[in-house]
Amino acid sequence: MPLRTARTEKLLLRVTRNARRALQAAADASHRSASQFVLESTLARADDARRFYLKFDFLPWPTRPMHLFVVFKNSHHPL
Image 1 (cartoon, rainbow, N blue to C red):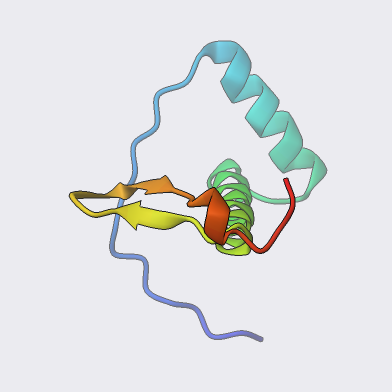
Image 2 (image 1 turned 180 degrees about the vertical axis):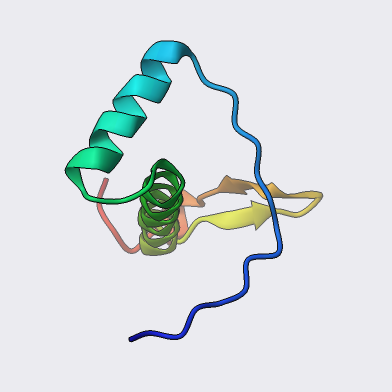
C-alpha cells in the first residue's frame, strides 16, 4: 500500500449545481470521492500543461514569471 502524504492545505471551490452533479457522476463512475476525483484530474491536467510548455521551450516573462512566452526563432519544434 502506498504511503499517504499528510494533507495540510484546504481548497474551497464554488461550482454550479450542474457542474457539481457532473463532477459527482464522474467521480462515482471512477469509484472515487468527488474531492479525490477533482484533485487527481486537476493534477493530471497541470502535468499535461507543464509538458506542453517544456516541449515548446516556453520561458517565464522576466518581470512576471507566471506569464510565459516562446521565442519562435529558438524553437526546436514545428508548430
